Amino acid sequence: MGDIPFSTLFIHGTVRDDTGRKMSKSLGNSIDPLAIIKDFSADALRFSLVMVTAVGQDVHLAKEKFELGRNFLTKLWNAARFMQMHTKDTPVHLEALTFNPDLLTPDDKHILARLHDTIAVCTDNLERCRFNDLAKTLYEFVWHQFCDWYIEYAKIGLNAEDPARRAQTRLVCHYVFANALTLLHPIIPFITEELWHAMDYGAEADSIMAGPWPKAFDLDELGKWGIDSRTVEYVENKHDLIRVGRTLRADYDISPAKKIRYVIRPENAGMTELLRADAASIIFLLRAESLSVDPDFHPVRMINGISKLGTIFIPIEGLIDVQAEVQRLNGQLTKASGDLMFVTRKLESVEFVQRAPPEVIEQQRSRKQELQDKCAKLCRLIAVLSEEGKMS
Image 1 (spheres, rainbow, N blue to C red):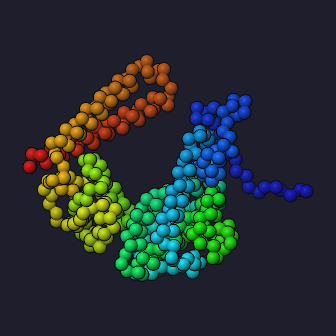
Image 2 (image 1 turned 180 degrees about the horizontal axis):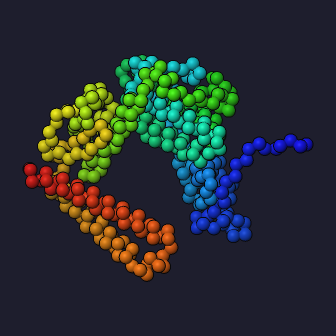
Image 3 (image 1 turned 135 degrees about the vertical axis):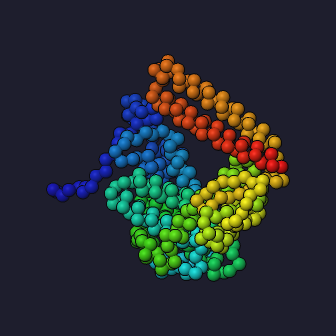
């Protein structure tokens, strides 16, 4: 008796439904957690609730929001399946694991640096009870940095002819994934425990809970693996380059499955050799037929996009029917212009502005900005193709 039962309390905001009403039994608008567990799983319930519970804000909840947690768990599960298929023969001893800097690619070094950034941020968020920020940080790292980017790059290393290169890629995959599971465990304990054993990470501990919490390395400590800020920045900028290349395909309706030629004119001379040495990964992610890196390139009949590493070009000769593509884009511009005119007239209506709820007005303003941006982009695309058409 007399002992303090809890030394730390976490108080969240009021839980409201999607219309903003406070959830209560009397209103009949509360959500049955057992039904959510049945439909989505206990971990999906936990992850979704943590994600939407921001410090100092009310929680707006609807059943659809639990899809976020379910989708994240599916992504995590699929990553584990991929690794089991490609790395199952690699013995994993996490505590003694180290890397050969000579075998690490820029993408390996980037994901290791981002992992240790994530460990530092997550540890700080846990200590300060910022659980929402913890979940968001892990969502970004696991979904985007690891699954969307690194696993794609890893496919190159996992299929390399050099057995040492293949082994190093497997080790990076396991090191990153095992640490990610540990960081996620406080939020989603069931699936992380299951995957921990399925991936055979239990050599050092019988349970993921009994293992050590990850320790964050700074850049000086990561230097033993040849990781520096320049390499990390380069890979971030490479992601930007690949996004620009993919956007060019989408803008001009070029099938993602079609193998095409790309040319990069580097932003500066120092990038030329780095891009050439890393061409294989760029070709793979862009699904390119070939890639040339030429600092003195002068384009003829090319479409282009600007990235942080330089300008990326695609030849249109034999790839795009310029006249048909201009016609398609003009059709989109006509529709977007009509939609913009409709929204603009609505916002200019005094009656609409006086009677509509503030959130509806804000939605229409956002819609107007989106349409303005779309029209401007379509005009730019049409101008580029029209100019190329004159040259043909």
